[in-house]
Image (cartoon, rainbow, N blue to C red):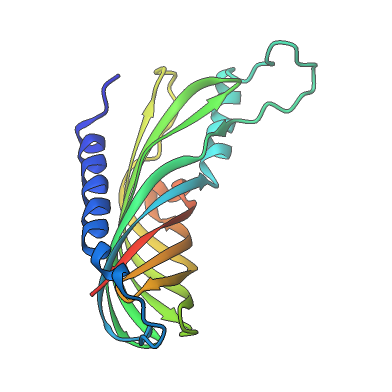
Length: 225
């Protein structure tokens, strides 16, 4: 199956941004300055690869699969074995643009995209989902030099597209709804213009797609102007 236009576009955007950051950052590594003001204000942007784990959706689909008679024992399993629905780690990326307005505070916009996650039972795929989150957030930063831990909170929108792959009548939770974003992580400044970011975030959609909440963990490069 060929990737959807959205997935092909997202891969192109991700690759382009990585190359842009690398091209801009390369000259910066010619000279290192340990006296740099790492907490300076100003704009920045970055891109990270992420892995996501959905929290509530597996239980929801598990109950529906039981009602539909889908839950069966795998080959070689004994009666009474717990065959809970599961999904692989959902992989994707996030792109963010921000402005550090104070040594302790920054505001940023973020787009986080997970192109595909498969919910399966006994190695059979029954539901596939795709999520896109756009949000604004405020970061509280602890300026410790090159290493800067932070916490964040924000709000935006989540678009979830869910597919009943085998047309079994599974009740799907998809559409566009309000979503909250909370989390934390740290930046490690590698040079004046380049930092590595590690983040853990909890995405909490509301409305009809409230069961599509997930936790993402990611890391990537950030460029500071």
